[in-house]
Image (cartoon, rainbow, N blue to C red; front, side, top):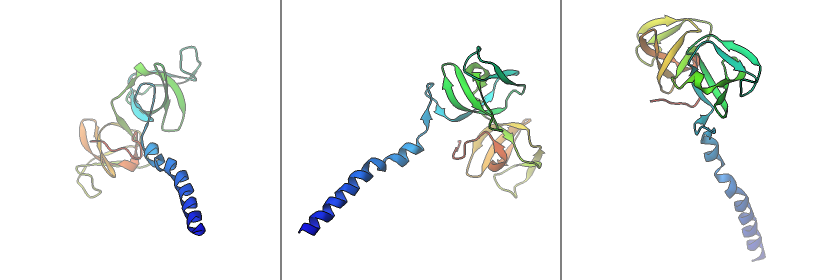
Amino acid sequence: MRRLLDILRRASCALALALPLAGLPALAASPELGPSGLPLPRFVSLAAEPINIRTGPGKQYPLKWVYARRGLPVQIVDEFDTWRKIRDLDGEEGWVHGSLLSRRRTVLLTGAELLGLRRAPAADARLLLRAEPGVVGGLLDCSEGWCFVEIEGQRGWLERTALYGILPDEMRR
């Protein structure tokens, strides 16, 4: 009887320790929301050119650099009032006023070789055009390994691994 009570006591202690942790995977999967109520991180695009990137959230902070390319995808990683901290493809971070960003989703083609825009989401699908790395296209949809994009008025599918501007687990429809 004493042995049975000891086993039950240990089991209840283990259960008491495990229960608070049971909800952690669900919490980790839910996105963090910024002060705007929108998820962090998230991708947006540059709405204007040029855009001053600052060291802090305000005009009183010094300039870090200037973007001169409208439509470029950037990742919002933090928010303060009307200012957004962004991260670019190279991992550089700085602050920009939110009015200079657009919710319009774009992608930047990456890699070292020409990329094939295809009629269907398959490597053997008909080739519509070849695009160079550095080209920016509009993001329309994403599935498992492919994204449907628009480049210079032509719509087709590109392999997801060749694109910057999409979160790893993000699916669009």
